[in-house]
Image 1 (cartoon, rainbow, N blue to C red):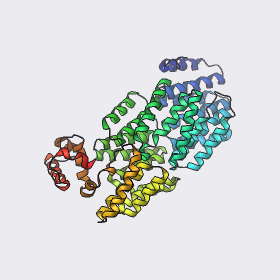
Image 2: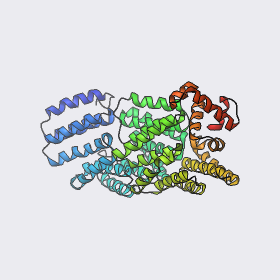
Image 3: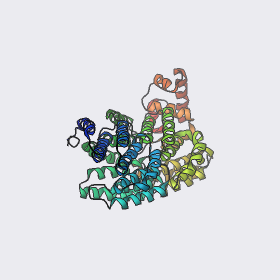
Image 4: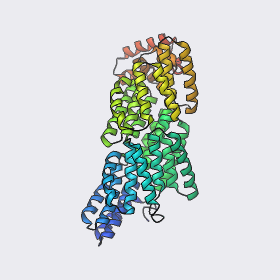
Length: 474
C-alpha cells in the first residue's frame, strides 16, 4: 500500500523490518521479491536490491522458493551489471525453474541476448517466454513483456518496420486494457530508433508520454532511461539546451544508472555535445559508450557508438574495431554500418551510395540521408558534379523523413568539401555562440590560433563575418 501511495522509501523501510520476522521460507521469499521490486523499479537502488536477494537466497532452504528469488536477482543483474552478463546468468537457471520463475528468466535472457546481437536466439527465447507466461494466472505476469523484447530484437537486426508495427499494435492494446505500463514500454521502444531513423519530433513526443506514465507509476529507473532517450531526440534535432535539461532531469532522479541503458545514456550525452559543436568531447563520450558496451555485454550499444564516431568524422579511428565486432552481431544493420565506415575511410562514393540504399531499405532514414550526403561529398571531391548533385537530391529525399534532424553529416556539401575536420569543429563551436577564447579553451589552442583559423574558414567559404557561418555549416 505504501508503494502504491507513492511512498516507496517508507515501503522499503517496512519491508526491511518485516523480513526479520519472517517465520517460513514462503514468507521470506515473498517479502524478498516485493522488497526487490520496490528497491529496483521504484527507487532505482539496484545494489541494495542485490544484497536483499543474496541474503534471502542464503536463508531460504526450499529449492523452489530459492530459485524464485534467484530469478529476480537475474533481473537485478540486468539493471546493475549489464544485459549480456544477466543473460548468461539466466540461461542455466531455466532448466529447473518453475513457470513463475521461468517467466522472469525468459525475459531477462531474451533482452540480454538481443543486446549481445544474438537476434534469432533472443527471438526464440522471447517466444518461449510468451508461451510460458500465457499459462500463468492473470496478474501473475504480463505476456506483453516478451513482445517488447521481440520489438527490441527486431530493431537490433535492422527490421525496424516489423518492430514498429508490433509496438503500435501493443500500444493500442495497452490503451484498451488500461495498462499504463504496457503503453510506456512500447513508447520506449518507438523512441529508441531515433538514432538511426531520425524521427526526432515523434521520438521526443513518445518519450515524453512514456515519462509521464512511468512517473505516475513511480518507476524511477525506467524513467531515467526514457529521459536519456528524450535528450537524444532533442540533441539530434540540434536543440542542445533542451537535451541538457533532459539529462539534468535524469540525474535529478538520483538512481543508480541502469546498465540496460548505460550505452544510450552516454550516447545521449555525446550527441548533446555534438549539438553544442563540441565534436572532440562527443568522440570521447562515444568511446566511453563503446567501451561500456563491451564491458557489460551490450554489443549492440558498442556498434552504434563506434558508428556514431564515424558519423561525426572519426571513421578511420573505429574502422578496425567495428570490423572485429561485426561477426558477433546478426542482421543487416551491422553490415550496413561496416559498409558505411569502409566507404568513409576509402572516400569511395559508390560504396557510400550502396550503404545509403541499404539503410533506406531497412527504414533507417537518418543513416541513409547521411550516407548519401557523404557520397555527394566524395563525388564532389572526385570532380563529378553531376553524380554529386544526384546524391544530394537523394539525401534530401531521405532527410525529409527525418523531421528536421541536424547532424554534422547533413551539413551543406560546400563546407564539408572545403573545410578540414579541425576547421569544421571550430566553425561549429562558433555557430553555437562560443567566443574565440571559449573555443580556444575547448580545443586546447591559443586564442590567436582560433582567430587565424576562423579567418581561413571565412576565406574558404567566401564570407566575412561569423553571423554568416550558421547556414553554411549546419
